[in-house]
Image (tube, rainbow, N blue to C red):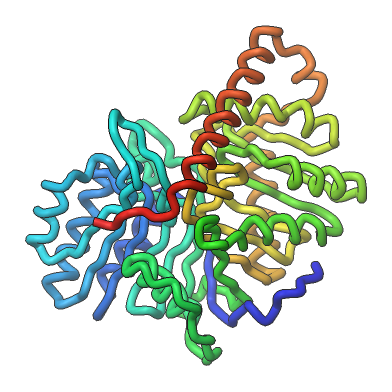
Length: 391
């Protein structure tokens, strides 16, 4: 796949990490081996068994003399109140909330910190869509939500650390150029790749992730595999997707059969007809909720991160993805998705969709209009309120 932005890519070692015990075992190992600094930016940090497990490990890191800084979203991590924050600070953990500009009656207006980024000693990082919660780890009664992250090692981690620090200190100066150096992977499973940090923060004029999606689909030649949560592409992206299918590109999208946000699920279903008529193959994942935000193109390029394909991620949330150029890693992911599609998914066909009841179609239409109007209102308030507080 042609890419005109190779100068923005840096040599790194990367490994795909799956939600569930694999992710949290990796996270605990990274925290346990940290020597001087741990940075965590996360949308949801719940004080359940998984959250307590991570907190216990962070407290041990502080006792070793490691500086621990945690930034959570005030809405997504509503269970961590000011009293809890003060308690964690007493252990030596620096923890703050990314606050909206206006709030009241459970209504939050303003940007959301949607990152899921952990940086260790500026040399290792986890970047993806996985929050800190039982839902993403799984329990005896419930399978972990389907999601992914990248384990990264190399100079790119210094860049990630700089970005996180800028958000925490509200300094958004242009970063210094990173020099590419050689390094050794910590795991034999890691693959040498070209990697690029991509951000979305409409207020700050950053639309890099949306641009990556559009360019990757425009440049696609053979196939695209997309695992998506809350999938509601805008008109311009739909035109690009439609153009790709007309060129003969095979597009497969894995969506969630189970709904964690019913209106969002209904809104996505409203677009099923459009997608199926344009020869996009749709697969609903059955074992658990799909929370993934991953796309792979032509088995040589992929992106993983926090960005959802909808207006909320485009205009209201602070997002981070990692773009990867690697035939080995992208090909591995596409092969894995093919296995998931074959073993764990049900394909939605145009004939099946055409037999949906009028009530179901009306409910999907209503959900789509409801979500679209709410996204528009969020965009209006977002365009008027350019700054958020960090406690």
